[in-house]
Length: 133
Image (tube, rainbow, N blue to C red; front, side, top):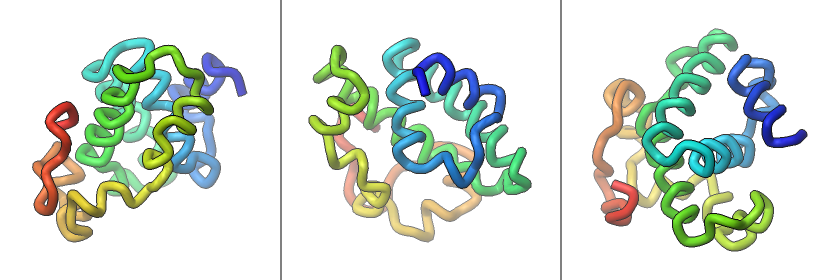
């Protein structure tokens, strides 16, 4: 799917939950980060992901912390390689493909907490890189 069509489908809530995996989350963050910068990318990702979770009957699954950290990680790497296409970007930064990357920074209990879902919270394990936090 072309980038514009992908974002349009995401924003309309037309992407299926089971078909919107980690790589799709990264693509959304990459597209928003390239087009709007980190802060606007977080806002747009939050809006879309909240709507996606709610449309599937699970609004409690949205996590503000996960959204902000993943968008920040992608945005950080975009500053290093702004001109790469998405596939090349992931080849250059393959650790982003590890959906458990945040586990070294956040305990499962903190990431699952209501506070972490409602707003960004500091990690309780390893600090995030300065460019991300």
